[in-house]
Length: 256
Image: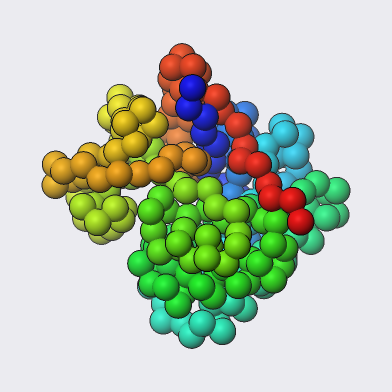
């Protein structure tokens, strides 16, 4: 039977501001991508989210993004390869400090927002991300959009990759995610989300907004934690996966 990791982007509040209900979402997950302070999050949110994920046995990953707190990391920034490398090392290093202090593992890295989407199509950016992750710890798993340039770069770099698909995002004909600026980018209907997940798992395909089908490899499934009703979506999707006999488990980390 198929198996899949179930992840969400968490720890995205900062100071007095909150984004999503992490405590309600986490029990349904096997992996958590924790914001590292640039697009969202701060030292308090990193520490508390690491502690909560560790308590529930959820695998912990770093979620680094562009240095764009005002735009939530969803605005494009033009950076050199060195700047991208430093961006990743700085943020992953920050979360690594908190996991070490909590005596738990940092298992994976997943870029956020505009950085994630750009690395999906731009090889120099993807290569810079992969070099940074490998230099920090070559046994870390890199999460990247299924079939993307980031996945190809990670495989070439010798990293373990978890190819990611999305329950609550629509797709374009080239396999990329529909930009959030366009209508229909987010899937807000639970039944549509579950249908998309099942097609990706059982058929290895996803239906695009243009009505065509594109192939995907579903190794980790993402649900955005900052969307309204995310906890209810997470619970329903988990139950649908289990009902289909699909094993939900965190991806295996490489041995070095």
